[in-house]
Image 1 (cartoon, helix red, strand yellow):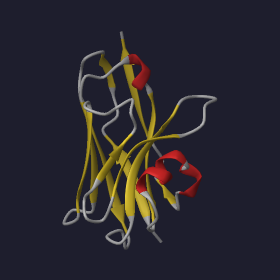
Image 2: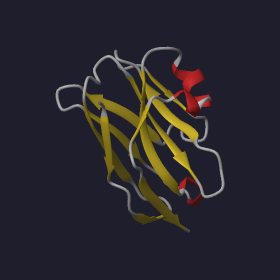
Image 3: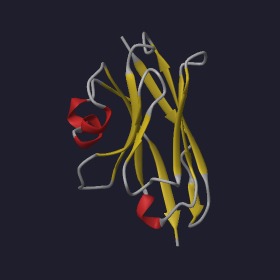
Image 4: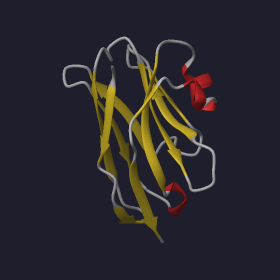
Amino acid sequence: QMHLEESGGDSVQAGGSLNLSCIISGHSSVYYIGWFRQLPRKDREGVATISIGGTPKYADSVKGRFTISRDLTKNTLYLQMNSLKPEDTAMYYCGTKRGGDLMAWMLNPWETQNWGQGTQVTVSS
């Protein structure tokens, strides 16, 4: 059974930075891993996904500001978020999926096979 646990969420001013972490237990090395976010009463949306080999995909809204990375030795996924905007405010979740297309997965979060419990990011103007 795979378990994912996010951390690093906080309240920051616009223009600030945060680094989210997701520790993954279980056989995660063969899975794609990604970050998704959700606002209240909104659908969950893809933020960034990364393949086993490390190829990342980003949503247009975060390109150039967010960086996804994974450390297989530590079974940890990261999301470095810079130049944060109020519209980045959301609950951020990490998720895993076994194979497929990274960009398609971002557009279809319901394909995710395992979720963490989420970490809240709040950006004030």
